Amino acid sequence: MNILISGASIAGPALAYWLDRYGYSVTVVEKTPELRLGGQAVDFKGATHRTVLTKMGILDDVLRRQTGGRDQTIVDADDKPLAVIPGEFTGGEIEIGRGDLSELLYERTKGSCDYRFGDSITSLTETANGVHVTFANSPAETFDLVVGADGIHSNVRRLAFGPEPDYVTHLGYYYCLADLGETGAEAKMYNEPGRMAAVGGPKARAFFVFASPQLDYDRYDTEQQKKLVVDAYQNGGWRLPELVDKIPAAKELYLDSISRSAVDHYSRGRVVLLGDAAYGNTLGGFGTGLAVVGAYVLAGELHAAHGDHRVAFQRYEDVFRTYAKVSERGNAGPFLAPPTRLRIKLRDWTFKSRFLLGLLLKMTDKFANEIELPEYPER
Image 1 (cartoon, rainbow, N blue to C red):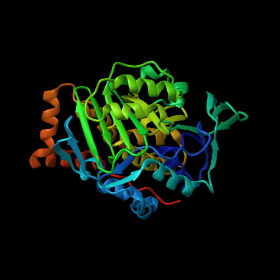
Image 2 (image 1 turned 180 degrees about the horizontal axis):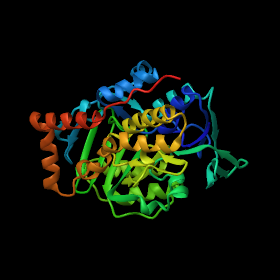
Image 3 (image 1 turned 90 degrees about the horizontal axis):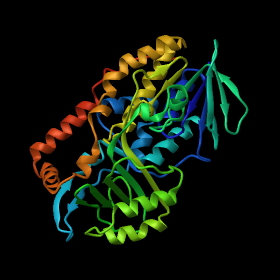
Image 4 (image 1 turned 90 degrees about the vertical axis):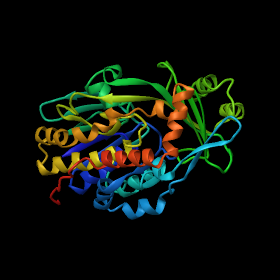
């Protein structure tokens, strides 16, 4: 079978690994001109994630590249410490740079899978025997199956299921990752009602979260995004004026909403969704685990069903739907950038109380392991 995957971040290459291992012919199409490195740190939690990484044979490589959890100090406007967020909370059990993980998966698959960078799908037409696909920069082809592993703004979901607003709900916050150059060696986080700024932390050199109604902007216009962030952080305390002044010259900047994607069914005919395209992205720390475990289940079910996509896609949904509900439970926005000073104090108190912090860690561990992983036959 010939399978097309849209998206070469994490979910796409993880699925490509398993499909190639089971003997499928895999093509991965990615809009960016080359593999996108950089980005925030991502993490894995607990036995389920470790098991899948071990089955993929990449656990040792991930451990070698891990960044290591790092404590982060919450400070007030005078830079006085208020509480400490432990590295085990922000970084899970294993933390690794998003770009490092993406590169690792790409290196494992580029020799046997066809990667096409700088291209995108423009139409999907299902036929009796496959899906006829047209591309922006390549000749049209027909594939047996198409997988949308292209994030919360999924192009495949739009083409096969319908407009993004039908499946993506804005949760009232935006987040921004930026490379502002040197911002200091210490990992610190500062809050004002409805906005947060962090420097030197575990996720990025500079990390911003702010409350906002849904904004209308071009996701590919970095200069426009910079202006939105600058406007959101005017007249702030602590180091906000200094950080705001650095944003226009930022080497890298990524802005997106904290939103939730949800579909009634993960598949439609010969098209299926994986990762944030189907279940994400609330910035709750589960997206990478869901993508990697989801890739294992989807590929395994296709292999177990001998390529019968109707059986495999239904089994994938039956096995995975409950596990993926963690993406429906959270919204990191109000936790990272509480809307009132009282809520900020209550959030800080969570990290001062060993009991409350322990409950939070147990809860995240439970969510990360709330699935009975099927065993699939080897090829």
